[in-house]
Length: 213
Image (cartoon, rainbow, N blue to C red; front, side):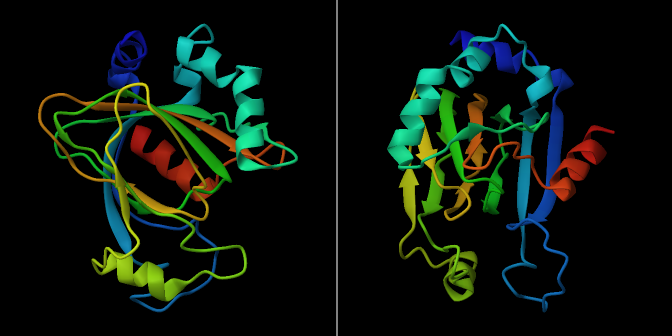
Protein backbone atom coordinates (compact mmCIF):
# COMPACT_ATOMS: atom_id res chain seq x y z
CA UNK A 1 0.00 0.00 0.00
CA UNK A 2 1.04 3.63 -0.39
CA UNK A 3 1.03 4.14 3.39
CA UNK A 4 3.37 1.19 3.94
CA UNK A 5 5.72 2.32 1.15
CA UNK A 6 5.82 5.84 2.60
CA UNK A 7 6.80 4.49 6.02
CA UNK A 8 9.35 2.00 4.66
CA UNK A 9 11.02 4.80 2.70
CA UNK A 10 11.76 6.47 6.06
CA UNK A 11 13.35 3.43 7.68
CA UNK A 12 16.92 4.69 6.94
CA UNK A 13 16.10 7.75 9.09
CA UNK A 14 14.14 5.86 11.73
CA UNK A 15 15.13 4.93 15.25
CA UNK A 16 16.46 1.38 15.44
CA UNK A 17 15.26 0.11 18.80
CA UNK A 18 17.12 -2.96 19.99
CA UNK A 19 17.13 -3.53 23.72
CA UNK A 20 15.93 -5.61 26.62
CA UNK A 21 13.31 -3.58 28.45
CA UNK A 22 10.89 -3.97 31.33
CA UNK A 23 7.16 -4.16 30.66
CA UNK A 24 6.23 -1.16 32.79
CA UNK A 25 6.96 2.55 32.90
CA UNK A 26 9.67 3.16 35.48
CA UNK A 27 8.15 4.22 38.82
CA UNK A 28 11.32 5.09 40.72
CA UNK A 29 10.80 2.30 43.26
CA UNK A 30 13.12 -0.57 44.09
CA UNK A 31 11.66 -3.98 43.29
CA UNK A 32 13.15 -7.39 44.17
CA UNK A 33 14.92 -9.36 41.46
CA UNK A 34 12.45 -11.54 39.60
CA UNK A 35 9.47 -9.30 40.28
CA UNK A 36 7.45 -8.63 37.10
CA UNK A 37 8.56 -4.99 37.22
CA UNK A 38 12.20 -6.08 36.88
CA UNK A 39 11.83 -8.76 34.19
CA UNK A 40 13.07 -7.64 30.77
CA UNK A 41 11.95 -8.69 27.31
CA UNK A 42 13.72 -8.42 23.98
CA UNK A 43 12.48 -5.74 21.61
CA UNK A 44 13.85 -5.18 18.10
CA UNK A 45 12.27 -2.96 15.44
CA UNK A 46 12.55 0.30 13.54
CA UNK A 47 10.30 3.08 14.73
CA UNK A 48 9.37 6.02 12.53
CA UNK A 49 8.58 8.86 14.92
CA UNK A 50 5.91 11.54 14.81
CA UNK A 51 8.20 14.29 13.54
CA UNK A 52 9.45 12.03 10.72
CA UNK A 53 5.97 11.58 9.23
CA UNK A 54 5.01 14.42 6.84
CA UNK A 55 2.09 16.71 7.62
CA UNK A 56 0.43 15.72 4.33
CA UNK A 57 0.88 11.99 4.93
CA UNK A 58 -2.34 9.95 4.51
CA UNK A 59 -1.45 8.24 7.79
CA UNK A 60 -1.39 11.60 9.58
CA UNK A 61 -4.61 12.69 7.93
CA UNK A 62 -6.25 9.53 9.23
CA UNK A 63 -4.91 10.15 12.74
CA UNK A 64 -6.16 13.76 12.71
CA UNK A 65 -9.55 12.84 11.28
CA UNK A 66 -11.99 14.14 13.88
CA UNK A 67 -14.65 11.58 13.00
CA UNK A 68 -12.21 8.79 13.88
CA UNK A 69 -11.39 10.32 17.26
CA UNK A 70 -15.08 10.70 18.06
CA UNK A 71 -15.86 7.16 16.90
CA UNK A 72 -13.14 5.78 19.17
CA UNK A 73 -14.35 7.90 22.10
CA UNK A 74 -17.82 6.44 21.76
CA UNK A 75 -16.43 2.94 21.23
CA UNK A 76 -14.49 3.15 24.49
CA UNK A 77 -17.34 4.85 26.34
CA UNK A 78 -15.18 7.76 27.51
CA UNK A 79 -16.52 11.24 28.25
CA UNK A 80 -13.30 12.83 27.02
CA UNK A 81 -10.77 11.57 24.50
CA UNK A 82 -7.74 13.45 23.19
CA UNK A 83 -4.98 12.82 20.71
CA UNK A 84 -1.63 12.53 22.47
CA UNK A 85 0.62 15.59 22.33
CA UNK A 86 3.86 13.61 22.49
CA UNK A 87 6.19 15.02 19.80
CA UNK A 88 7.73 11.59 19.32
CA UNK A 89 4.98 9.00 19.74
CA UNK A 90 1.56 10.63 19.27
CA UNK A 91 1.67 9.24 15.75
CA UNK A 92 4.33 6.70 14.86
CA UNK A 93 4.92 3.52 12.91
CA UNK A 94 6.83 0.35 13.70
CA UNK A 95 8.62 -1.66 11.03
CA UNK A 96 9.68 -5.19 11.93
CA UNK A 97 11.91 -7.33 9.73
CA UNK A 98 13.19 -10.88 10.03
CA UNK A 99 13.84 -11.68 13.70
CA UNK A 100 12.31 -8.46 14.99
CA UNK A 101 9.85 -8.57 17.87
CA UNK A 102 8.17 -6.32 20.41
CA UNK A 103 8.39 -7.86 23.87
CA UNK A 104 5.69 -8.04 26.53
CA UNK A 105 4.69 -4.59 27.80
CA UNK A 106 1.99 -2.24 28.96
CA UNK A 107 1.54 1.19 27.39
CA UNK A 108 1.80 4.45 29.27
CA UNK A 109 -1.44 5.87 27.86
CA UNK A 110 -5.08 4.80 27.87
CA UNK A 111 -5.70 3.57 24.35
CA UNK A 112 -3.65 2.59 21.33
CA UNK A 113 -5.25 2.37 17.93
CA UNK A 114 -3.23 0.57 15.28
CA UNK A 115 -3.67 -0.11 11.60
CA UNK A 116 -1.72 -2.85 9.86
CA UNK A 117 -0.16 -1.48 6.68
CA UNK A 118 1.86 -4.51 5.57
CA UNK A 119 1.80 -8.17 6.60
CA UNK A 120 4.98 -10.20 7.15
CA UNK A 121 5.44 -13.61 5.57
CA UNK A 122 5.24 -15.37 8.93
CA UNK A 123 5.00 -14.41 12.58
CA UNK A 124 4.30 -10.89 13.71
CA UNK A 125 1.18 -11.97 15.61
CA UNK A 126 -0.39 -9.55 18.05
CA UNK A 127 -0.60 -11.50 21.32
CA UNK A 128 -2.37 -10.08 24.35
CA UNK A 129 -4.00 -10.74 27.71
CA UNK A 130 -6.90 -8.28 28.00
CA UNK A 131 -7.46 -6.45 31.28
CA UNK A 132 -4.87 -8.48 33.15
CA UNK A 133 -4.50 -5.52 35.49
CA UNK A 134 -6.77 -2.68 36.62
CA UNK A 135 -6.28 0.70 38.24
CA UNK A 136 -6.85 -1.01 41.62
CA UNK A 137 -5.11 -4.36 41.13
CA UNK A 138 -1.75 -4.89 39.42
CA UNK A 139 -2.31 -8.67 39.47
CA UNK A 140 1.42 -9.35 39.52
CA UNK A 141 1.00 -13.13 39.94
CA UNK A 142 -0.92 -13.42 36.68
CA UNK A 143 1.60 -11.20 34.86
CA UNK A 144 4.47 -13.34 36.21
CA UNK A 145 2.69 -16.47 34.98
CA UNK A 146 2.51 -15.04 31.43
CA UNK A 147 6.21 -14.21 31.58
CA UNK A 148 6.86 -17.82 32.65
CA UNK A 149 5.06 -19.13 29.56
CA UNK A 150 1.52 -19.68 30.85
CA UNK A 151 -0.86 -19.06 27.95
CA UNK A 152 -4.14 -19.21 29.91
CA UNK A 153 -6.20 -16.21 28.90
CA UNK A 154 -3.76 -15.27 26.15
CA UNK A 155 -5.27 -14.33 22.82
CA UNK A 156 -3.60 -14.11 19.45
CA UNK A 157 -4.68 -12.02 16.48
CA UNK A 158 -3.38 -12.47 12.95
CA UNK A 159 -4.21 -9.10 11.46
CA UNK A 160 -4.63 -8.42 7.75
CA UNK A 161 -3.71 -5.24 5.88
CA UNK A 162 -6.17 -2.49 6.75
CA UNK A 163 -7.35 -4.13 9.97
CA UNK A 164 -7.86 -1.71 12.83
CA UNK A 165 -6.87 -2.79 16.31
CA UNK A 166 -8.11 -0.87 19.37
CA UNK A 167 -7.02 -1.89 22.85
CA UNK A 168 -6.46 -0.55 26.33
CA UNK A 169 -2.71 -0.76 26.33
CA UNK A 170 -2.37 0.36 29.94
CA UNK A 171 -4.42 -2.61 31.21
CA UNK A 172 -3.68 -5.15 28.48
CA UNK A 173 -0.35 -6.98 28.50
CA UNK A 174 0.69 -7.37 24.87
CA UNK A 175 3.50 -8.15 22.47
CA UNK A 176 4.25 -8.82 18.79
CA UNK A 177 5.73 -12.27 18.17
CA UNK A 178 8.96 -12.55 16.15
CA UNK A 179 8.69 -11.83 12.43
CA UNK A 180 10.09 -14.38 9.98
CA UNK A 181 10.88 -13.83 6.31
CA UNK A 182 11.95 -11.06 3.97
CA UNK A 183 8.68 -9.11 3.96
CA UNK A 184 8.50 -6.59 6.78
CA UNK A 185 5.59 -5.97 9.12
CA UNK A 186 4.51 -2.32 9.05
CA UNK A 187 1.98 -0.92 11.49
CA UNK A 188 0.80 2.64 12.16
CA UNK A 189 0.18 3.57 15.80
CA UNK A 190 -2.19 6.32 16.96
CA UNK A 191 -2.13 7.30 20.63
CA UNK A 192 -5.02 8.80 22.58
CA UNK A 193 -5.77 9.53 26.22
CA UNK A 194 -8.65 10.70 28.40
CA UNK A 195 -6.42 13.46 29.78
CA UNK A 196 -5.31 16.34 27.50
CA UNK A 197 -1.62 17.06 26.94
CA UNK A 198 -0.51 13.48 27.52
CA UNK A 199 3.17 12.80 26.90
CA UNK A 200 5.16 9.59 27.23
CA UNK A 201 7.48 8.66 30.07
CA UNK A 202 10.88 10.29 29.90
CA UNK A 203 12.77 6.99 30.45
CA UNK A 204 11.38 5.61 27.18
CA UNK A 205 11.98 8.87 25.34
CA UNK A 206 15.54 9.02 26.65
CA UNK A 207 16.09 5.45 25.47
CA UNK A 208 14.84 6.46 22.01
CA UNK A 209 17.23 9.40 21.96
CA UNK A 210 20.11 7.16 23.02
CA UNK A 211 19.29 4.62 20.31
CA UNK A 212 19.16 7.41 17.72
CA UNK A 213 22.54 8.73 18.81
